[in-house]
Amino acid sequence: MNANNPPVYTTPTMPGKEIELMPEVTGYAATSKDFIRDFFANVRSAFGMGVPEYKEMVRKAVEGAKEDMVSRASALYGDIDGIVGYSAGTEPMGPAGDIMVAKATGTPFRYKGRTASKAQATA
Image 1: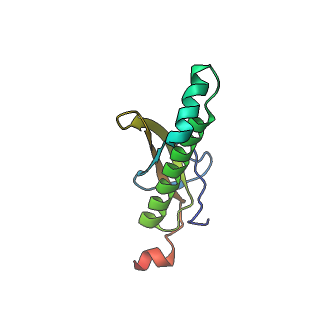
Image 2: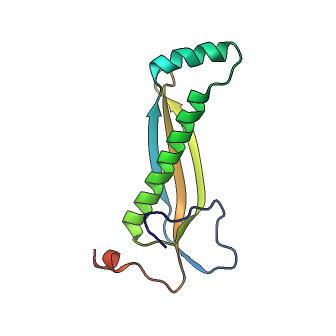
């Protein structure tokens, strides 16, 4: 499996597969509102319209946290086969809730009988 892009699963294990679990890893990301777009988003929200800017901000934060988690797992454990038990959450921060912080957690794994890549073993 390519260590730069291992699959991420929400399930706690791989049914029918024997895997070796590594310690859980966490990734973080933060995004902030664009104040000009925020003004127009507030106007649309006041009239009961959707606010795609906020959905996009949350999506970017969660994707960034997931990418950070995968990157940290690969840096710590080398060539992994994937991550199980993935979950993510968000929390607004800042005085006006203008920063969206996302946290992603998961457990890296290798299929049993497989070893780390040569590069990781010599590091």
